[in-house]
Amino acid sequence: APAPSPGLVGRLFGTAPAAPPEEPRRALDDAMLEELEDMLVQADLGVDTALRVTANIAEGRMGRRVSSTELRQLLAGEIARIMAPVARPLPIYPKKPQVVLVVGVNGAGKTTTIGKLASQFRAAGKSVMIAAGDTFRAAAVEQLQIWGQRAGVPVMVAAQGSDPASLAFDAMTRAEAEGADLLMIDTAGRLQNRADLMEELAKIVRVIRKKDPTAPHNTLLVLDATTGQNALNQVETFRQLADVSGLVMTKLDGTARGGVLVALADRFGLPIHAIGVGEQIDDLDAFDANDFARALVG
Ligand code: GDP
Image 1 (cartoon, rainbow, N blue to C red):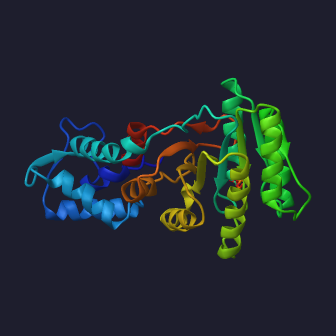
Image 2 (cartoon, protein in one colour; image 1 turned 120 degrees about the vertical axis):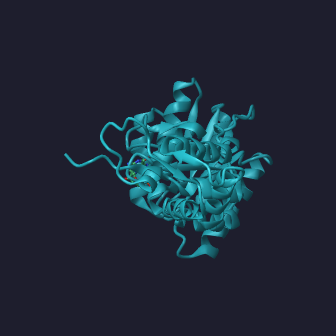
Image 3 (tube, helix red, strand yellow; image 1 turned 180 degrees about the vertical axis):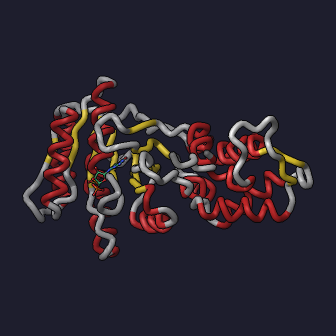
């Protein structure tokens, strides 16, 4: 069988014997810090965050001989410290319906995440409605209807190519009439024409606010962990298009460890409301800073 992967920190120490009587130690010197920094950059933390994390680890410890376990703990601690403030579940507003706008590029996992969230809120006893706001993609609407069925919540759809804002308005009207707790609105994710998408999202928001000036109460940006550093650009872009209030990162069940979340937390400080860990309805977890840091460090 192949040897298990030594993980982020293990690689700094070379291959350890099968059952070492004592862990190998390495002096925390410039060479070691540089290697650590490179590894953090490779793990998608980005140069700025990698430098900051490395500097914090170095502080007061230069020249000290550390074992891989110690360094692993130091690193996980540093990362958890950055992540702790952003690990926050989706805030629940007393307002009915609470309106959650969901944005993100096509394929990021918006539809899937909406289905999973709907199921969780249903399980918590909330009445939920979904609006299929990406009216141009028939496949997206179909997928959302399938997720609605799985979660047991109604999905409002409109004729293909019709105005998403008008659908959003109708959905607000129905959600109000039926006393729904939560209305989740899916949106288009075509970044090819940014100005177009910006106007589309702005119009949805304008129309929703005619019904409730405090809405949308959350604007969730869904990001795909497998896109790595690209997630930074997506946050930059979508913050210009919409008033992004929080993030969900999907596909953390694969090989991607989501190191870019550290860079995101460091740069934007946006709350991370949940993480996608699979394609099934229950595969949406709360984001836990310590679990995440430990998994990332390996
Ligand atoms: P949308 O275009 O943003 O609505 O993206 P979808 O929700 O349709 O998801 C795109 C693909 O990613 C689908 O094949 C989903 O099954 C898959 N997907 C979404 N979230 C996850 C996740 O957390 N883990 C895995 N492995 N796949 C996911």
